[in-house]
Image: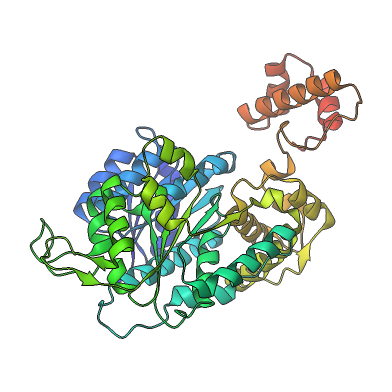
Length: 460
């Protein structure tokens, strides 16, 4: 049976193209043009993957994502967005998004993302369907650590030393860092280097757990304990028994389930929903967050006693923009992966592309770098990735960039120049890069506009 995909996007032409393309690739596809219509479809049928536009006419992408996770929690969700929205779209990962793709959509790139997302989601679902009393084995997720490489920056070297130090200690660890910095990789590395390496590694995204189902997913339930509980079910802690459980986005865990988690840590026992007896478990707990748990404590959203139980050791990951030495190391790694998945033979990056990579802020961190490299490899016709294969937001960074585009020692002139440059960029974006219309919007003639484009090094 082919996998089921739901596309939620108000662009009817785009939906038609995507539906036709994915159907030819032997997927079963349904389409909805508003968030609420998509939710109605989800209530009638379970899907393997939802492709959801970040900007819907009736609800936000985050609202749609949250509703999808309640109605069809096992579905993977890929956000469709414009590149200018990437920084915001990355935030959807804390609510359970699996990946994002940027417009314009390219068929080969989309197909790779669809295949990889469905495969990874099935691997994770398969872990949780294992019986708690079956013979524990190393999961695919734990084994996949070998696909990753280590950074070369001083901070990355320090993190690796901390991983090697804490791995054998069997202590709980909080891994803190922005979305996309590799928190799950760190957790996998700790597991792999521990005495539990031959046992299960179970990763749970707390952001993707609906409040109503989180208790069942984590701790299990017995048949008849609530509507829909047609069979006994082992929760993630039972499946991970003897191994490691990784709770990503721990700050999203409800207060009620925080209490249950505290009890698990203190007593090393879990109780399935509806059960009369406890089940002893032996699990190492690793958690990750991209928010300030200290602030969550002050606001009463996170229990202080649970925080101190989890915070036996802390590993902090710097964003990619603060460890520039790692950018090319990972870019080359992602290049090799993209060549393999897209059947290409691109050999490297031009010096101009390298310069852009080192200047860009990478708010989506490694995840964004991976997506940019994959798309640039797809668009490259020669042996080297050139700047015209990169998104405009990378080759035309905003005026807030650390780089100065106006060579003037006078600070006031520099500020004014940056403001003028940004006004030109905004006008060009508003009129889809039509220079005549942009000049009219700015109330200047075309010649003046061309001189400004040259002055501020704007490629339009």
